[in-house]
Image (cartoon, rainbow, N blue to C red; front, top):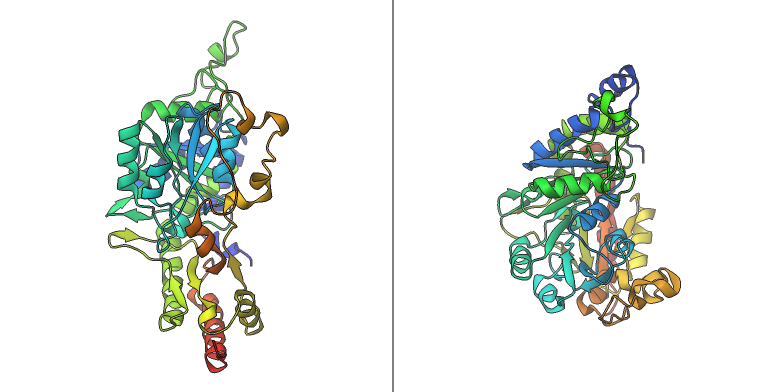
Length: 411
């Protein structure tokens, strides 16, 4: 699927501005700053920090709140693996929590059971465009002095109880990968209202430069200072996670059209809902009152046993009838071989680290709800450039449903 329909705004204009300015990096140019401000303003946050991915965003957030060797970070069992991997990259330990079977997001009650004296942070995920239940998570954070990093990679402009989710957690991380609501090809951005966290996050993402400011990633503003042989450049440890200026130019143009992109996904989601609403073997992701789902993808549980049809069989027929395919949900992260085999850093993996005083086992039965629900989830593609482009795919779904309804087996 080509995404050229996305780039009908000011992308080329802003890219030309970057090129005409001398093609600087984010350490010297101003396009990243413009993009950061535009995005932060859009979601209602004070600070935005642009990154080269939606994974490096979370890594820097963990570093900013001091997560380190021996610490525990609670993450959902249903998420892309990077949500857990960034914890490993800080030599900390992911603790997996179960999900709510209706919203598919992390279950705050299960989170509460998994907090220990070693817990340092929680990374809930706004899965498929829907916010997790943030109020009880923030209450747990206050009670236990924890940081909340909302992994909103798939949930640009999602709302929770009438507020944009970018205003509600200590830090909110977004992905800008090419399938997301807005894109820079690859990339990410963090927003926060905390000035100190903003500066720490930005420093971690830019080699720990001493001159980094909460709202400014440029480091070569004053040549008289920067070029002096006595100048000391770094006062913190960091990585090079900066977003290129050209990517920021695309991001700025995309932010200008974000409402348009989201409305299109929501309208396509309504079409899928109409197609499945009368089928008792489909249960769409539940959206509680006061939430706004921005539908990165349209997700429903498929109870094929009610009509004697296997998941794979339904997908095959859907493709035969003109569908684009159906994505399965990720395996529970702790059942991926890298986790179930503890294949991290060999003998030096965090779970064998003498600084870690707990014990974890990544095996079946750890999170029963996700293990029951995940094999049933069907993710329908929502990333189309128009209603007209999506209509044949929705029609294919209707035809598939009709086919199996007419050919129900004895069950």
